[in-house]
Amino acid sequence: MSKVSLTANSEMRAAAAARGLDCSPPPPAPASAKLSRDELNARRESRLAILAALRELGCAGFGNEPFPLAIGIDKDLRALLDGAFTPEAIGAFIHWWVTRNPYLEALSRGDPRRDLDGIVTSEATPEHQAGARRQLDVRARRMASAQREPQ
Image (cartoon, rainbow, N blue to C red):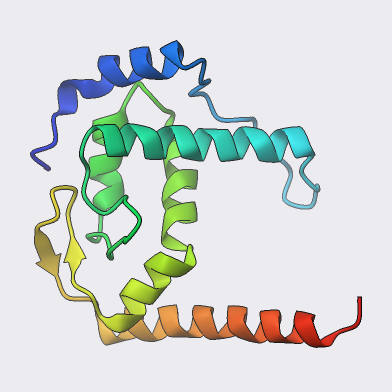
């Protein structure tokens, strides 16, 4: 478990409430349904509230220069944020964080995986590096294709 204090939950809830942030996730949408603007905004606000809480707690890796997170860090995050955010909201946050381009770029470079304190836990495997490169390549091709198509 990380050295980051696990007693911060009540402080995080109080800080989020003081800012008027709702820490509860929006209800899940059916897979085939398109999300409304309000639902998208609620999900975005939930992710940003979790990100703010992690930064306030001094968790390494959630700054402007992310690094690959330790395998299984979701358990540490759920324990750290238990009660302040639902497991579903934390899971959605983790998915969002690890699919962002800066994270994938760090992983594709082979930067080491680290825990919440920034301590190296393992090296990024060649398979994970290749997977990150593939995702970045797909995104680059989509962007290039979208730029070529007349609007």
